[in-house]
Image 1 (tube, rainbow, N blue to C red):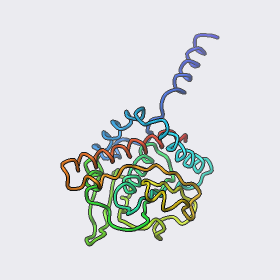
Image 2: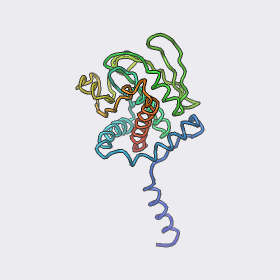
Image 3: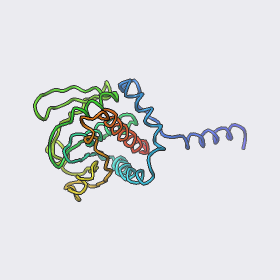
Length: 233
């Protein structure tokens, strides 16, 4: 093998083991959010192995849909669609954008309705999302933006089978144990994965409130970014 061929082989072998990075222009992401994401990626190694095994099921669904040229529809479900399911929907949209995974649509819903909790919205804002309340009332609508060149997400509380959510061909992602038990089967879902998170609601009105909401936001961000980082396009 001559020197040129040796250099080519060495280069290709090095590329093959490098972790997948975003191919999306970082300029389109909100700058503060881009910094947050870069920090969160450093915590992939902190995700427990048994947790990764469940998260890998979501990656498998995304990969299967992408390989078939089919839409990737992810519906995050918790009891009241107020905190954890919204975190999941919002971070999945941002992660798909960051890793340039096409044709991904993210949704959320609950077994009941309440409101997108203002504390959860504030945690997303601290992470770098642009949050705007566009209506008032008990269940206001928020517009959530993560990049300058994308349409904002419309966030409000709804049941998981609401008409604004997909009725068939989606992956149901259960983000709380109560919803997981209440919905052993989700009508219309082609895949179902349970990745319950602790509810920051239990710290409402306490000195730990802000820290706990930020902690849950960061955990869901890290695990969702991990899921999309493993998709091969």
